[in-house]
Image (cartoon, rainbow, N blue to C red; front, side, top):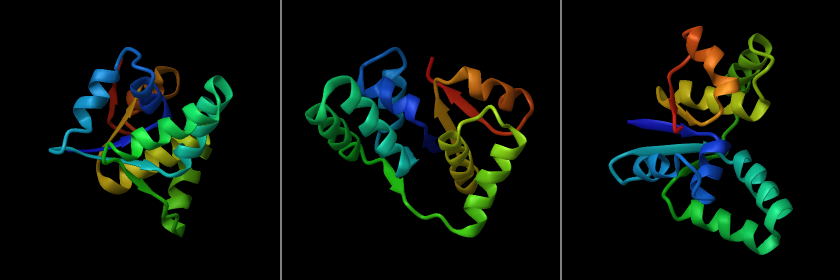
Length: 133
């Protein structure tokens, strides 16, 4: 199975919050996990603000060690798809729109704990989501 991880799933894993065990199972070698590289910026910011530079660097290093494939490509069809999602579902953050576009491109599932953003999309049949809690 192929998964597109959003920032909330990776934060839950790094902080050992509820749902961390689900993310740990998904990063098993039998699975393939992807994330947008821009999420690294979001995570670095979150950890640096809360815990300092060292914690931020450690968090990124931990994620890199998990075999998550961080995608940096941003061709026209990709950013247009993310833009369509944002235009059609304005309450969804741009970072999550990029995650959704990635999941669609890879025919995978989004992995998140953000019910407030993703529940309406699931109800509308827009995509498949694996909620970690």
